[in-house]
Amino acid sequence: MKAQRGSLAVLFGGLFVVMVGFGVIIPVLPFYVLHFGATSVHLGLLMATYSTMQFIFAPVWGAVSDRIGRKPVLLLGLGGFVVSFTVFALATRLWMLFAARALAGVLSSATLPAAMAYIGDVTPEDQRGGGMGLLGAAMGLGMIFGPAIGGVFSRFGLQAPFAFSAALAAATLLAGVWLLPESLPGARGLGLRAVGAGGGPRPKTAPAPAPAPARRVSRWALASGSLALLFLLAFVVSFAIAGFESTFALYLNARLGTGSDQMGLIFTVMGAVAVVAQGLLVSRLIRRLGEDRVARLGLALTLAGMALTTRLGSLGSAILFASIFSLGNSLARPAVSSLVSRKTEVGQGAALGTMQSFDSLGRIAGPVWGGVAFRFYPGLPYWTGAAALGLALAASLVWAPLLAVPAAGGAEGIPR
Image 1: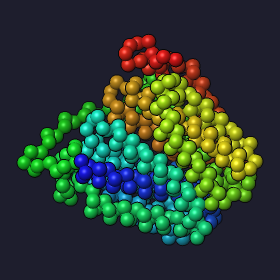
Image 2: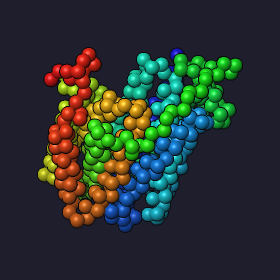
Image 3: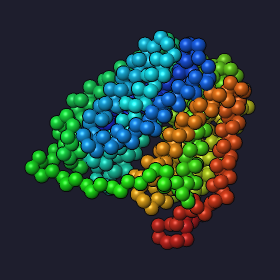
Image 4: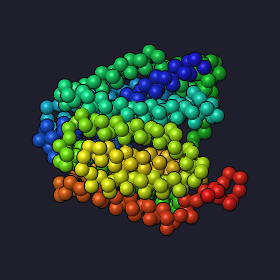
């Protein structure tokens, strides 16, 4: 048990560092790109580059971890993080920024699927939800501290936040090398020690039998019926979030003259709202209202926050409207994920993986459209994002029966 807690602590630190690095980028990257003479279009393409590589390679690294073990894939992801952020800090040309983000998408995308698989290896089924929740908390805290770090360290130069993140990731990588045991029985990579579900070493003379290969299901073949509607909702929410994040710093700079330190404050507040919402509100609201109504409530709040952003006139109003936006998507995303998990008939892994693919597509399209739209009119990314959310909300109302989930004890549905 002690070994299991130590392993989870290292995993917590690794994902925390990855999300800190992602959070650091949000308030600083727009100003860093402008430093190289780029435009909002370049910024959108730069952010989409990472999501595109992640979309392609994250499933690959998950499969590789099944063959060679979780630890080497996790360490590879952290190592890619160190290298990519070092290149980012030392870049002297715009193309170097694109190369660094592409490298980050290829290698750093190994971290999350391997970490989730590690949790599945070392926790019993009745404790697995808590283990996944621990990783979610690490990611949420990273999104709180990342923007704050980006804002504070940017005062020492726009390269400073990236250098700090690279150093933090390097320390976590060394800790993983020494402290993280292998979790996959019979792992073939690097001769690492296998650990059983309880955290202790598994005897070499009694390896666990290999699981039967799962039936392969095309991620696109799953997109039908209620799942198709849920995947659409996941795409739209991701599209809106990515478009918001990619242009918000430039928008506030144009409207209010804010810099990277103020943007760090705003995104830190947004991260705190997200952690509180997901930690305290989501489960309670789902028990009272059901996933379908919580999803609609989240869509409505996200829409409101995005539309109100076009009317902001001060830093205080920017924080308020951004917090409404963050609260909305913090309710919508977990509710949609839960609905996908409950609605699928072909396996949660395949269905949730497909949802992640649509989420990634939204993170590719959102920054590209946001960057282009911002060039035409600074408020256009927010109006079009609000329009997309409005259409998604309308679809969830028109096809409400597709989202209804029967109560556990019968077919009457969740009490309203």
